[in-house]
Length: 143
Image 1 (cartoon, helix red, strand yellow):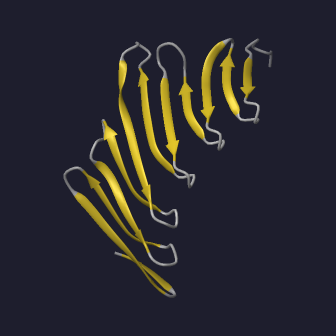
Image 2 (cartoon, one colour):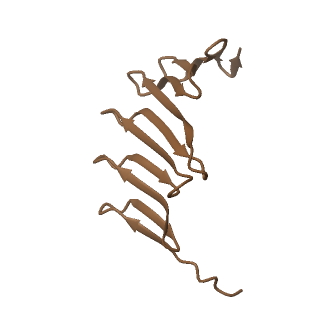
Image 3 (cartoon, one colour):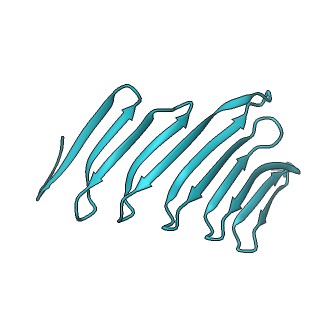
């Protein structure tokens, strides 16, 4: 098979993290990181048809917010999405809520003293669904 002549190039941060990707000179992806080496921004595409996701973290390295915005290939804005996360003292995900086009959707969780998931409640802004999990060795019961 003949080589197509296309060139894909990658650039890296001084800490060897992927910083960008180009294909035939056109930006395909760009990445940014915080001092803790966690990804804080990801942009896919260039010009029209761009999608950007940003993330923030707390001191315990937990993801606490995320946002995604973009444009269509035609150049019009895409509706944004947002996420907020909370954690318990043991770094277990305790809840997530959404904003933007999915506002009102979220969930909460509970764990036992061994950090096992014992409950989950999902909401969509109007209704909710609850499940519980019980550990009764050797069985695990999901209600």
